[in-house]
Length: 288
Image (cartoon, rainbow, N blue to C red; front, side):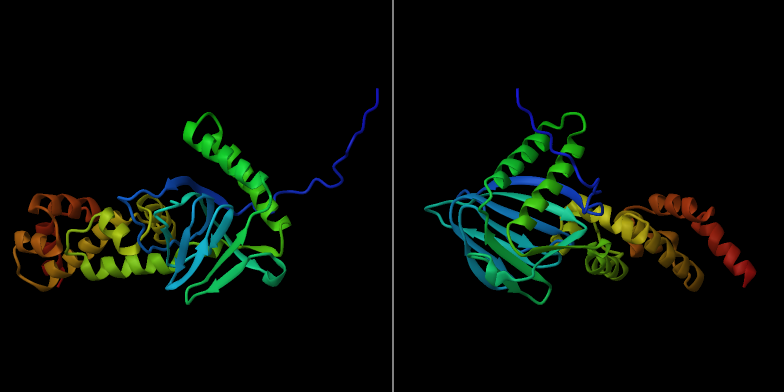
C-alpha cells in the first residue's frame, strides 16, 4: 500500500477576520418585477447563474452574462436589467468589512472596472467552476438554517474570496470603516429635520435604499441608538425646549413633536426625564 502525507507548513490564521457575510440571496427575473437603483454601505458580489442583461452603476452600463461576477464596492448606486428573451438568474452575497480592487485589470480576461463618483464596480468572467458550487452550498445552508449554518457560510465565504484572489489580480481591502458613515449621517440629518413627521423604519429604508434590517443594525452601531430610539430622544429634546420657552399646552406640544397622542408623549417624557411634562415645566419655571 502506498500513501502520501501532505503537511501544513504554516498555521496561518484567517486573512478575513473583519469580514462578515450579511446575506445570501437568489433572484430570477420575471416580467412583473424590475429592479430599482439602490446602494449599500457594504460590498456585494453578484454572480450570474444564467441569462443575459446589463448592469448599471451610477449611469454607466455594461453587459453581463452567465458566469460573470460583478463586484459592487460600498456606496455605489446600482441596478441590473434583464433581457426578456434570456432572463437573468443570479446569486448575491452581502459582505461587510471588505472592498475590492484590481491591481492589474488588463491581465484579467474580459474584466472591466467602472469608476463612479461613489466608488468602483468590477466585472470579470469566473473560470473556476468551484465558485458556483460554493455559492450553491452557502445558499443551501442559509436556506435550511441547520445548527451552526452561520459558521459554515462564513467559512465558505473565506474559501470563495481566496478563489477569487487566485483567479487574477484581484485585491481585497479590509476595512472596518466601510460601514456606513455616509448613510448613517443621512439618516441622522433626516431625523433631526423631520422629527415631527410620521417616520417609520420603512420610511428610512426607502429614503436610503437600504435593507431595513441592516439599516437598523448599522445605525445602532454608528450612534448607539436604534433609529426609532434616536427619533424618540430627538422629540424629547425638542419637547424640553418647547416646555421651557413657550406656554403651549401639553396637547399642542405633543402634536407639534409628532407623537400619536398626548398620553404617549407624557409617558415617553417621564421615562426619559423622570418627570411628567407639567412637572418639568414647573421645575424649570421655579429654577428660573
